[in-house]
Amino acid sequence: ALEIKSIPYTIPYNKIKDALIELKKTGKLEIKDIQEDSKAYKVNGKIKHQILIRVILPKALDPMRARSIIFKNTNLEKTLAIQFYVIKGDREIDIVSLKELGLAWINERRIYKRSLLNHKIANLHSTIDMLETKIKLCKEENIEKVVDIFRRNTKDDTAKALMKEYGLSSHQARICAEMSLRDFNKDALKRYQEKLKACMIEIETLNKIARL
Image (tube, rainbow, N blue to C red; front, top):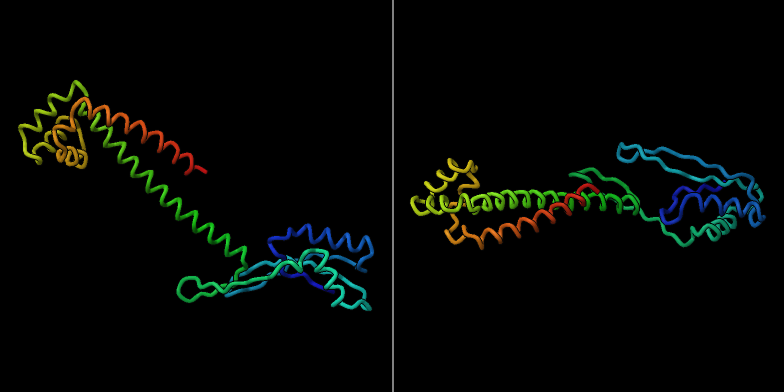
């Protein structure tokens, strides 16, 4: 019997099986039976499963000739089995196929990109929070009092007054206290509103990507 133990990911399992059935049906190769099996084996203490196809041949048939026919008609001769020794952690060594290595890399890349995406979303939330605070302070009903607070107080006292008067957090108040009076007028209000609109569109897009 011949066993096909390593099935390349570039050739679907069913295609190999169908090709073997066709060889048997057309008489190009005398095959007594085609069996499917799976085998479990250990690599560094971990259980791995291997799918294999067992081709039962007549005893008189030259196995090397049969292998050549099978390789040619199943496209196996166009493939090359590659295995990689991969170091995991400090000492653990694993043996993986090209497909496993590629999928592992894709998974790690996905985790990394998601981390960057989450970081960007968090920064956008922080930016939106500050823009909403600035818009609140620049509104017509608040602007005169805000300007008066800036003119009458030091930066530290300005921050405290903004926290008391408008319920700002210490972080929000500290950032606003560092701003100048020209950052609190109608033109500034328009800029903040436009930037807020752009940020809301961007965060909606990023949230859609994050849900994929």
